[in-house]
Structure formats: structure tokens, C-alpha cells
Image 1 (cartoon, rainbow, N blue to C red):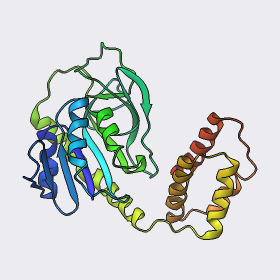
Image 2: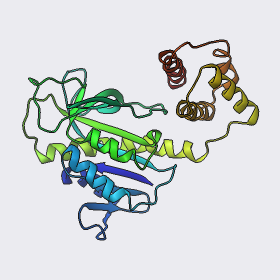
Image 3: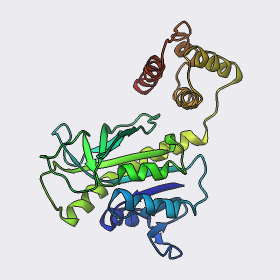
Image 4: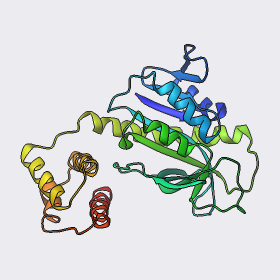
Length: 274
């Protein structure tokens, strides 16, 4: 099952049409649409509002480790590094009133741009103090709520650039078109992820022993180790030579936590760029 969270009815409309979703009238407080493969939740606008809506609805779902959660919606960009209509896969999320960052696990190759998302409790303009590459009013609430039900590697925050923080309102038809134009590309990618998830865990015992050995040498935590396994599965499914990859790291020693993260990111980047 792919669970989709959007903030507004107009962002939901192209998805409802594309996937022929039907309203689930058993949910009274929030609007929910579904079929056998997709569940769409309209959360409403706002950090707190979106977190409440998701928590209320997701706790009723039978979620498993192969399910995917995606937050799809429009965002403002603070720089012209992004074009209107660009799809941005969020790699870091912060709240405007809290500096604590959240990092979705991006373990699969993709064709989107990446960027950091900062969520605000109000509309902002380019004159405001903004630290993220892009901004919205839901992302951090959505991620915190979804994290109670999904592992981080199951959660994807995808935003479509709609403006450069120079407009207070956007035409509904324009928003509809932006989301509609992303559907095929985004959900083709999710289909590929689902396929890989369905045939993963193909690492044989001898490879697993080597992976554990490298993980111990690099001082990977339990969390990072499981991310490492996901990456290795992905790499092998795409024809990568696991033995050759791991050999590069068998004599490396780390001295502190920052080096642990650095080595993991080095491995991740090598796999993603292969």
C-alpha cells in the first residue's frame, strides 16, 4: 500500500482522478480516499493540523514494512536553483521554531532534485529569515507523525516548487496542474521501489558475514547497520559487486561519531551514483 498525504483538496484532486480513488465514509473527521493500492489522506493546512490528521487516520491502518508513505504537495523556493514545477525530494526537515533536524532515509536512486525543507506556522515571503532550500506549512508535522507508524526508509517527502515566496495566493488551476504533471514520474519511481522491496533480502550468508564485519569495524549503530543492509540489497539487485564494494572499507578505522556518519554517507553516495 502507498499512503499519500496532501494538505488540500486541490492537491488531492488530480491523484483521486488518476488512481480512481473512492471516498471512505467511515472516516468522519478527515477526508480519506482509497483503492486496493493507494490510500490518500487530506490533512488540512498547518504543522499541527497535519500531524493530528495523520495520527488520527494512520492509527486505524494495518501498516507493514513494505508499505510506503509519501507527503506530496506544493512549496515555495527561496532561490532560483529550483525552477517552477521542479520535484524536490526532501533530505532534511526542520521547523522554523525548532532547530532539531529530521533526515528521511534516501536509499534508492532517483531523478529528482534534493533539498532541505523548512516548515513554518504561517505564510512567509522572501523577506523572512529562511534557512531551508524550500518552505511549506506541513512537512515537519507530517514527518513526525508518519515516523510513529513507518520506518524512516519508508517515508518520502516530495514537494513541487510553485513560487519564489513572492505570492500570497495561487490559482487553484495552477496548483492542480503542478501536481498533475508530477504524478506519472513520482509513482513510476514508487513502483520501482515496491518491486525492489518485494525481492530484497537476497544477500547470501557469506556476504552477510562480511557486511557485519565491515559494520563492526566502522562502528555502525544498529540503525545505520539496517540502512546499510538496505543499501547493499539495492546495490546487488542493480548488478553491483558487493565483494568489490566492501573490500574498499575493510581496512578503514573510525575514531568518532562524525567519522561513522561520514563513512556511511561515502558508501551511500558510491552506491547511489553507480
